[in-house]
Length: 109
Image 1 (cartoon, helix red, strand yellow):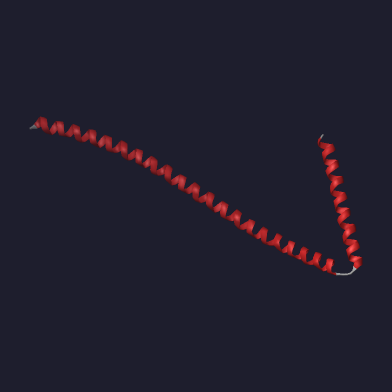
Image 2 (cartoon, rainbow, N blue to C red; image 1 turned 60 degrees about the horizontal axis):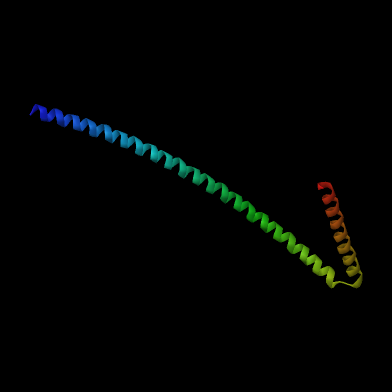
């Protein structure tokens, strides 16, 4: 009977040691999952704030474009003199664009 209890004690010690090892392994996995979940949460918050900022930027750009389109429409609907000015400005902008393009291409070459 004494041998049985000694053998039983050794089995209990082995099972306890194995349980401690498994518990430690589980604790480290839980810790990794917790840090991963924290990182995901932090990243999601950063992306949400970035997207909120982009939304306000798009709204301001939309307001600017709407105002520009209204002014352009008003200018086109107005008299002949404004149309001449509009054509001169348009041609001037195209010429400036090509000049800048030419200068940049010569600098890079």
